[in-house]
Image (cartoon, rainbow, N blue to C red; front, side, top):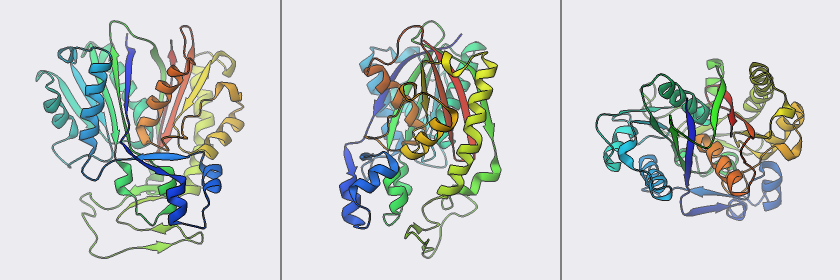
Length: 334
């Protein structure tokens, strides 16, 4: 049986506020940005700060914050769409930098916003089958390095962050269960980074274009089709919630809190209303960090814990969705 034991969070020092964005795009006043996104500020990784650096920092913070003996870690999983290299993977770099044992499993997976729930599912399986006793799951993204500075849409949404979660076979704060995962690769082109892979290693010239709202698109940078992503989310997440609750023989009333991937405030509120989740049971944690990709759910869990929103006996519903398209959900029992 697997338990989530501890979570630590790392946020870069640099802050990008709505005032900063409004100064660059005067047609977008601070109030408009806040009302459309629910975000006031986001953290931005330093120029020479990469996802492996943040992964190392958050793991060291976890070990220090909870007095964890790093020699007890026997599996390392890292989720990142912004790794340092194509190979070696970040998990090898991080294993060495942290001084973890050499007789452990370690690998990366590239999954974006649904990555945390997928990571919990994998760690849960490793522990349930006896492959590992203590799994260190790290989500670490420097997603802002993929954003064109002229792309006001994505500049307003995304921030950088890392989270470290320890899952243990022996004891912990809560138990994840009732996982459901899904994939629709037909939506792959709706959130995509064209440059950098073997299909398109680089572009020799600018590929900039603009839509009717003045948003800049450039195949050298992150592209996201907002309307398509919004449609995907509204079509996918409500039935996902219903399916997991049915699998668990539960209802919305049986859940104490719903923690969704913190994509943007408007989308979250639309999902809440459509699924008919009471406002007091729906957790928002996006104002100070923005969309931090796979780290948004562990950040939300950490903040909810600080606020006293999580207590023994609670059931918390997690749902994540994004690039791929991919999605996943589970229930945490505290």
